[in-house]
Every structure is written in C-alpha cells, then in structure tokens.
Image (cartoon, rainbow, N blue to C red; front, side, top):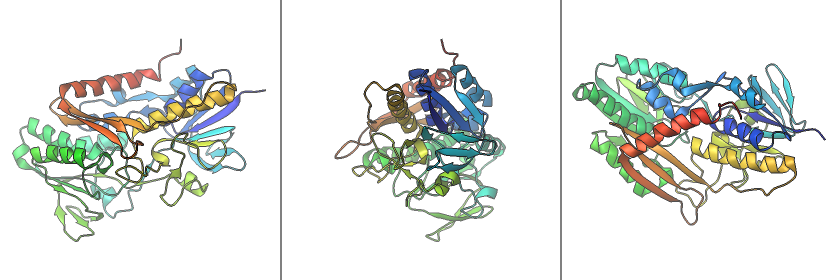
Length: 388
C-alpha cells in the first residue's frame, strides 16, 4: 500500500505548520504536497514592525522551497478549482489528486468593496502593503491620522489597535506628536469584542491614554481623497488613512460549495473536519461557531491556525499510520499587543470554554515585548531548519 497523498492548500501559518508537522510525524506514510501562490512564507505578526521601519523584508520571510529538504513537495502555483467528488485540485499549472485535503488558504482582501479604498487607504495585512504604508508614514508631515476597521470579521482582532498605538509612539519619538491628530473608527460595537467587555475596556483605556478618540459602530461606505463617510452620515476628515480591508474567502472554495451563509468554511470545532469526507479547513478561512463566546464565531488569528494545524497534523498522522489516538482542539489562543516604547501587552485564553471564554489580560511591559521578539525568532527558525 502506497503512501497517503495529503494536499495542503496555502503556505501561511496554518498550512506551513500542518505540512511540516505531518511530514515529521509520518514521513514514511504521508506524501505531503504544499501549494501556495507566493515564493516565500511571510510572518504576519511582524508586519506592523516592518511598516514602522523596525524590520527588513529579509527578516520576516523565508523561501518555501526550503521545505523540500523535509521531503515536502512544494508547488508555487495558484489554486483555480477544487473538485470534491473527484478528489482533485486544479491549479494553473497542474492537476493534483488527493487522499486527504487541508484547506488553509486564509482570507483575501476585497479592496473594491468600498469605493475609494484602493486609491486612498493603507494597511499592513500583507507584506507589500506594509512596505507601501512604511513609505507613507515616512513621508507624513502632520495632520489627521485615521485608523480603523472597514468590516468584520477580519484577521488578528488586536492589530488595528496595536497599529494606532504604535503610530502614536512613532510620531512622538520623531518629535511631531503635537502636529498629529488621531481618530479611531470601527464597525465593531466595542474594542476587540471577542475578548469581552472587561478586557475591551482596558484596550480602550490604552487608546484614551494616548489621546486617540474612539468611534465604534461606524460602518465605512465611501473613502474620498481626504474624507471618510459612514452609514451614520457623519464624515471624518483624514490626511493619512490606515484601514483594515474587507475580508472574503477565496473564489475556489466558494465555487466548490465549501462555504456557508457566513461566507466561510464551517468546520467541527474539535477536529476541523468539514462536511466533506477527508477534507479539513484551518485558520482564517474557517467559520467556527462559539455559542458561548462574546462573539458568535471564533476570531481569525494566526495562533488559532497554528493550534488547529497541530491537531489536524496529529490526527492525519494517526490515520495514515493506522495507529495512535486522535486528539481534539481545545480552543486555546494568545496574542501580543504592542503599544510602543519597547512594551507590549499579552492576552491568552480558552475561547471555547463554557459558559464563557476564560481570557487573561496582562498589561503592557517590556517582558511581553521581548517575548514577542523571541516568538518571531523561534517561528522563523522552527519550520525552515534542515531536518536532522
């Protein structure tokens, strides 16, 4: 009997981890194929640092071809369609059959959903956009900086709040804080609603302490050259705009009928199985119900993609080897919230706990900033070292 062919779509945090872990756990039993449109893996938690000049491109990316040293078949290619009945994935250059399929394609950005977004807004949700924002920040000489969230859901719920705090610190260090006015707007009802009102109020206090006004329940509908318009009708002028772009699932998964009314792929919370035999989905592309949570669906964040990847890799290894005991994902996650000045806050919790998620907030300190630096270094080494 030959090796089971496991095709992993997406080489981001989740896809990278599941492909690598499965190859480590079942090297003789699994033929692992990884497909990603990009040549490099890029580390999203470092994008804010990149945008503010604290990192260089080479520090936050690694060539996915290095995974071939582990015996992983790497395709730099674009997924065009998924044939669930025929167990095939069609890309621009090939047709790949599978015994097991792991979908980790993440979210795409719909820059044309809101008129004016593409022309006037900056963001850091991919590496190239972070570099473009870096140029805009370096050329900024004063005025109103608007930071906000266009639509929900979006990746890394703390990211826009982190960006506002880091920008405030950046301009203060450059001696131009008095020439900069901040405004924070969001479609959310409260700061970081997924972590609950108590922690959300502490995040709001951080904004207030920096003189950053907060405007919730503002659904953005139009961006002019220097003015934002919302459903409420209240305009907001700006000179520099950072805005989280609207997110959506990639077309191939929608066309395959994998998504539901949420626009994302529904999965079993403990196993990450989809409704289709031998098909799993992990990370940002999923819709995972949290009926006891502060929000109805699990937030989109790399830490969850990583944790889910560990479970899927373990369970697939059990299946292809024909021995061992499967595990269930526990819903644990954590993230850092950089605030500038060499400090960061830390949030962690069990997001699937009943009757409510149990989440801790650790206030900003140098310890948590250093922990994030170490985590970055660990991640960039862990998956790309030559196997022993």
